[in-house]
Length: 429
Ligand code: P5A
Image (cartoon, rainbow, N blue to C red; front, side, top):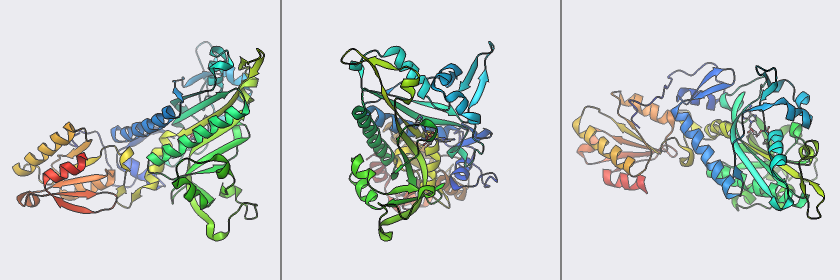
C-alpha cells in the first residue's frame, strides 16, 4: 500500500476526549473514529488489525474443534423471556420494536439464540459433544462507555458455546477452551492470567476471567508468580491452576488460604480480554434443550459459554505495547510488517530503489506500507513511529550513495545499515 493514497487520517494533536494511551494512539494513528458514544468506525489501519486478531482467534477455535457459525445481531425478545433474562437484563439491553410491534433486541450475548438453535436441530446424545462459535458485533448500552474500543457500546466478541451430555464432558470442553485461550493470547504476544471469577449475569458456578497485564489496566490483579512458571510450559492443567491464587483487587483477601508469601505475590494491573463460564443446565433446562440419552430417556444438555473481546483486544494490545512516540505492534497482529520510508521523493536514486523494494516485497507476500509522500523526513519518521509497524526501512540519498539502506526495529529501536539485498532477505525470512 502507498501512503500517498492510503486512507489513514493521522492527528498531530492529542484528542482531548481520550484518557488512556490506547485510545489516544488509535485516534492519532487514524485507526478508528467515534460516530456516537461508544460506537466506532474502523478505518483501514484499524480494520486490518481487527481482522488479524479475528483470524488468530478463529484458527485457535478451529484447532480446538469448535465450529464457526454466524448468528444474527438482532434477536427476538421471546427467547429471552423463555430463559427468564429479558427483564433481568435491564437497561444495558438495547430494545427495539419492529413495524409489526414485535419486541426485538440488539444481542448483548447469544446464550438464548444458540440454545434455540441447538434444541431445534440436535436430537441425540450421539451428536455430542459440540462447540459452536461466532465472531459477531454485540451491543450493550453501557452507562459509561469509555477508553475507546476497550469499553464500547457496540463491540466485536468471539463467543463460543459448548454442549455436553454430562458434567465430566462439560468440564472437558471448559478445559479445551481454557487452553485455546492461553494459546490465542500468547500468539498475540500477550501474557494472559486466568482469574477465578464471578459468573454474574451469565450464571453458573465455574468461571474464569483472562486478564492481560498492562500498566494502564483497568483492574488491579494479585497473583501467585507460579502462574508465570506454569504459563511458560504451555498446556495448563486446570486443577493445578485452580489451586493457585489469582484475583482482581476487589476480591483480594490477604488471609485467603492459598495466598502466597509476599515475595511470590505479584501485584499488577490487568485488562479483561476474555471470560469463560460453565453454567450446566441453566439455559437448556429453561428452554427445553434436551436430547435422547443412551437409554432413550430425555437428557438435559450441559452447557458453557466462552467470550473473547475481539475489538477490546486491539486497545489492550496497544496498552501493552507502546511508548511515548506511538504503538509497537507485535508482528502477528501488525497492520503491515514493514514501513518503507523514501527520504527524498523526486530523487531518482531514492525513487528507483524504493519502487524496486516495494515491488519485490509485495511480490514476496510481505505486507508493506510505502511512504511515498512528498513530506519532510521528520514527519515521516514521526508517523511511522506512531503507527508502530514492526520494521522500518529507510532509504535516503546519502545511504544509497554508499550502497545501504537502514533497517530499524520498532520494538528494540535497534538500527542497522544493510545493502538492499540483505535487507530484503531479512524481511522475507
Ligand atoms: C461469554 C460468551 C459473555 O458475554 N456470553 C457469551 C459470555 N461474557 S462477558 O464477559 O460479558 O463478555 C465477554 C468479553 O467481551 C468483552 N466485552 C467488551 N468489550 C468491549 N466493550 C464492552 N462494553 C465489552 N463488554 C464485554 C470482554 O473482553 C469480555 O471478557
